[in-house]
Length: 601
Image 1 (cartoon, rainbow, N blue to C red):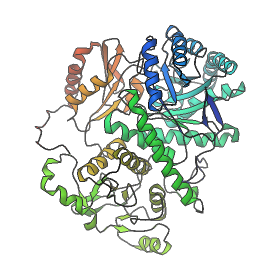
Image 2: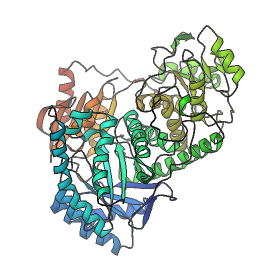
Image 3: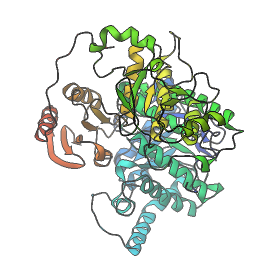
Image 4: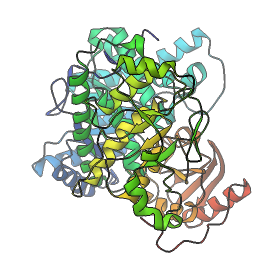
């Protein structure tokens, strides 16, 4: 195991202690609760609309509001926006979101409480150029960046303005990409370069972020960042902002956000969060509030239950900084292969199976595959030395899980199980310790808890089957299980969308366009489509996508295959049809099957 560690114990730890950074009148980090923030979708040039939307967000419970500032001229309009918000009686902190333009940052810092800069494109270049940088050339680039960035540090220091050094996986510079690759390490190094420039000037009012659309990449990057900060020294205890970029909309967006954000909060990492949904910004707030609540409960149980454990990092069986599936052996149960190279299976309880048995042909892809009561799964308490020894002595691989009602948090219990038993035994994951019989449970909280618990473990490479038992409704529990597997990248059973939230940079109506693309392509199982409002994160975040639909100019769309643009300046009213043509050209299109009446659950 690497000497780098991001938390005192992988089996549960209290919230990471950080210094406090003041953003206006709001404290982030330190003893403050996890802060909830969002971003305006209104055009920054429309002060009235920005003021109205900000006040709506504040009324919903948003604690920090971010506004894009694409150019110096647009950034200047932050002055009347902030003034209008204050006249309306709100002291909510305002953050300027900066990409590409140092002069826009300098203008914005005159009016706002915090400036977000992206090290990948602030005075740096991204043209997807492949070249070797000598150490001297690399140092020369850093000197140029320092010359551009230092004035902003000085202005923020003078005015008491905070800063977020926010790396995005989709917008790493060519310099970083060529030296470190498109990796979590590259994301961390990019941010640390800017942090060192700030620290050399005795400026410490900054917060880090490491955002990505892929929860696995996002989790690994944040873990590595915190581990590197720990290694740098105690005074590198800066707060952390968490977010999954381009999470999408609806249930999928909520699940993907909960996997990334919830996993890290459960490990004690994170001081402020934003749930990025392709919906009106006001809908992000209750999701973020519920996620912070659920994750606080999970984290508190982790820390309380594991405070007396003697196990530590030397006992873990997975690499927290690079995904690798646990190497179990294949077993066959009820005709379904589980473990080995098989896809993660979906279990259900006998009662739910019986409730659905008469309409299995109507459930589409949300099929129950194994009845847990008939599976022969062995439930074992990972703290039971005798039971662990007996299991490890078995010659044959056996499906295992934890007992219902165990007095350990879910993440702790399964990490402990995976670390103590031989890898050949496949593991059935559960989202909660006891099956729910609560008809009145809030589904959003059920969804977020299941996503945080199961998603965290799946992103650790642990788990060969899943059982969602925190949701009582049979069909809904199956849908939740499959959607968690999809969002974590563990089992792709439908079209996958990477859709960014709208903001003032967006060049078309993201919500209606995303729905139009979903309607046309939602049957293309296994195809990944990125819908991006502008070029800021477009090509980079689309690296894992098969096809991309990106705003290139007002009313004009560029289409991508992977991260390569292939069609330019298409009229918006033709672009979805041209996207379909592009999918057909690459042999990924098939006609949608006829819908079965009553298939929805």
